[in-house]
Image (spheres, rainbow, N blue to C red):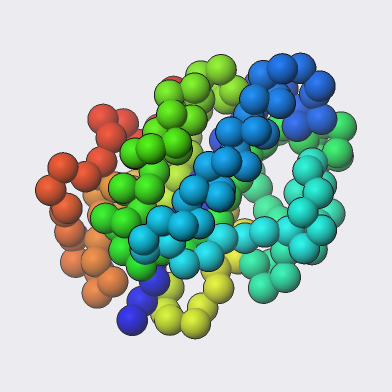
Length: 185
């Protein structure tokens, strides 16, 4: 049975190494969100660096998830001191489970604070696509899908909650699914 891959990407207002309270709040809630999401029905796995260290995204060992990559529009730093981004790569059983995990509970609380931490996006900040059972998506896969979504809109290759597709490529809708916008503002 296919699994749903999800890549998210956002540009932070300040570098990950910034010692300000807002950066610490982002980290603190992020760690709690990851713990909660990992227990959510439908969640399968997410990319985690082998060393688990903060701020070393580009140099980290991501194992089967591949080398860390970012969209071409990311123009901030790539060192521990200058990296200013948040990205996730995860696997889910289906759209409904992902929607429920993202738009309820602690993650919803974090989304409500996104304007404190993230720059306004001119691009989509997440993308879904289906992968065969046993396939681990890579960071490069996520970037390529997000850029495809940005350039061509939703398609079976790369889609959003609002314009979703089933594993066989047919358009699908889940009642009540989807935020008012596909972009973080």
